[in-house]
Length: 589
Image (cartoon, rainbow, N blue to C red; front, side, top):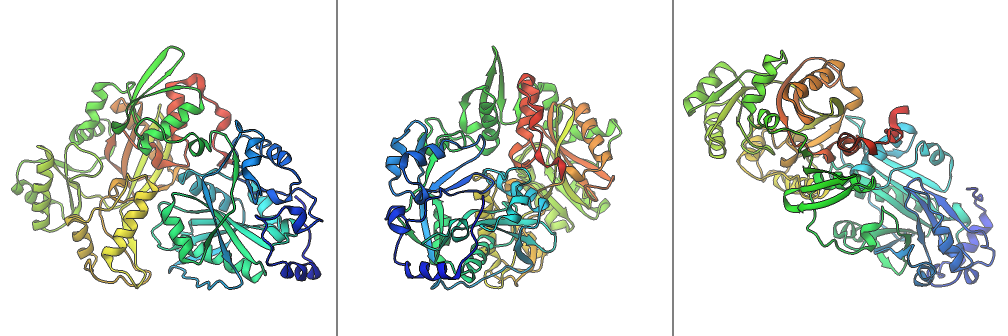
């Protein structure tokens, strides 16, 4: 799209027209010279400026020119209901609200978290991380190599928030300068695609990105900044209102496509699936595989194609035999099979009593106490060093399972490797739940805020319990629950890196050492598992040393985005639907 250069005289004319509002008057009343229909490609879809179209029919037709896999948005449409009437089977009014910030009078106080930098997008590596965050948030990704267009298009501005310690992109936001796009008579701009990494520990990243972008547009002389937010996104609306945004009568029109389906079909009749089942069901629907939800609350569903049906419970399918399942069900059994195969495992002992636990501690200065059976980190106590906490951990684990295990604590990072059909599909470092101080809130309040963020990012699957184990970890870090945590100070509030207790996951698939990759495939074969999540303790993902801790027969595929986990699972179940041309777009980076 070609854009016009700013003209000082034109800028003065715009300032004199500040009272005009583009949603209330037709383009001819605003600026007769606006005859060029304006469409801005944002990478995830096109922003279509409705006020630049001369007729509702032309605007409806432009919306129907949407490319597959994209999400176009028509904004500033004077008569959205009339546009939809041109093809009600293809178009709908989006159930979103538009909020506006008056930039000249806005009080923009930037509160940048300690250790975080905000900067403009620089290239393909930023694009990879933006898409990683978009996918984790269920958003439409940027087109391949779209960063090249972003760097050359003056109407578009993309900002990223970076954790200075790790160098990771942890948030992003896009802005569209309407004046640069088409000499907008209202001298406006808009904010789009705000997203924060669900694994982010730093509070206030979304607020900081919005504020930074608003400051940039204010310095450029823009009159207002608009944004669109779903009507039921109460948390986001509270954020925008606290920054001075107010609602305006501006509406979006979109096309009826697979991406937008949930916005126009109404509530589903069946009970909602959890995120681990939904990712598989969504991929099956994309391939034309029939889905029958058997028991939503338990994650049970059947997949059928060509007269063949496969029963599933999330990522566990009937392809996993009962014998293979029993090898993973008991952690001591898993260890024996792996040890006999020559794979590296930690020292382990079944504990019959508290005295057994204390005797095990006397031989290992740091231990893990856990039930032999169980999932989601229940009853697992990591890095125990004192007799009293070891004894307490034994009694707690014994309440959950009649068989309790003691295991030598292995120092290193917690690595989950996902093997599907004898192929490593994803690998991720799992880190225990942590909080970062802001110098204003107590440890308890920061834990509660981080827990809400984790719950929101995982549809309620991840949260940080405020229990004795959390209290122990906080005390071991030298703090109390009601103490204010200094700005920038990070502490672990859990020892186990389990996602259900607030842990975070960081993709390292591309960095995985060949020895770790081979060990994971061999472990899956030894256990006879067609799909399995293996828990390693490693020095680093790119180093060969390891110990295998556990095998999970029903790993959460959604935790490993942007890796194509659900795709590879469906490739295994229904190989005739596999499309290898859809391999991840990031291989070229």
